[in-house]
Image (cartoon, rainbow, N blue to C red; front, side, top):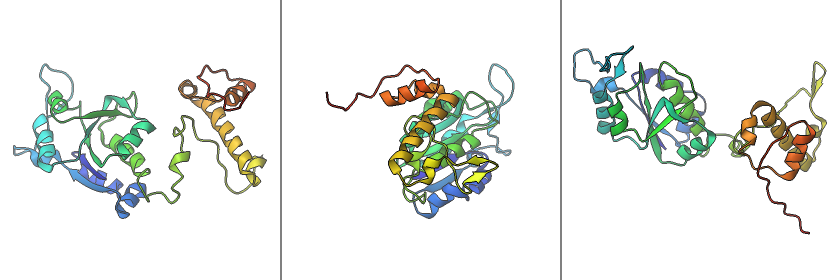
Length: 251
């Protein structure tokens, strides 16, 4: 996969990408990165990448020429993804979509955003981390790349790990425990200490259901649940209106 950053802070991005799963993805040959600074595509003595917005208003706006020329001069991978509060909220399904591509480019805005002509000329996709504003798109871009890197071949030690993450099946991940079996009077659930894998999977499903119902009930509205799931939630004080998975039992 080929990924490019368009940012006025390439060194900071390069530094972060030298650690963790992003670094591992590069080491195993699953990821190739490039860092492109729009300042290298300016035409004035001060290498200006921003200017005051027409019509007035607070702050400065990133100019269109340096960004567009940076993208065109480097033949970057498409789609070009603009990190912006006005974009589609990032989700695991969007991460899977990006991970299936041969590459993409992360465009990091700054100041009050980018000239609207940038979006018309080169932007293919807009992504937001949520309904809040950061000083720039760099942190959001790193979040996207790290989430994508985890899904690339040979990056994680356990190939099954991504499939068990939160949101992969529409629910939050189940509670997990490690040694010691008891800490300050709090014991690991007994079912996890046994070897009955069917019971363990049943416990994990129910743990996911309870966590989701308690912390992110909005996800349950989108999740297709079995009759057993709905009954279990009802027994624990949660009532949800969902489309049930058809029963496979024969009459």
